[in-house]
Length: 104
Image 1 (cartoon, one colour):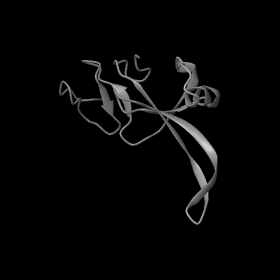
Image 2 (cartoon, rainbow, N blue to C red):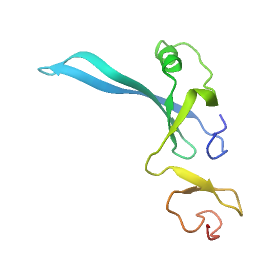
Image 3 (spheres, one colour):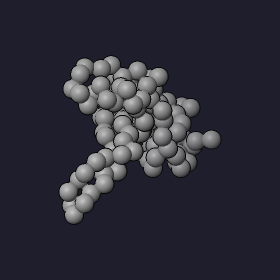
């Protein structure tokens, strides 16, 4: 896929997270389930549409569209591109790690 955030080629990694109610270490049920997507190119995190997540969990083939994703703020997320070379930059960078130009 081409990342909607940084524009580089990468892949999506889908994770299921939720809270489990346990009784003496025996999981009884899960609630608050969310489907999260991690991009390998710029370490961005997205929340995936619930229906698409359920389809993936059933081992059915799915093409994830940009409209299925809601960007989440996370540590290490890339927020801007370098005006000189277009490289994605971490949130608190003063200089581009790729070309060394100062970021405004």
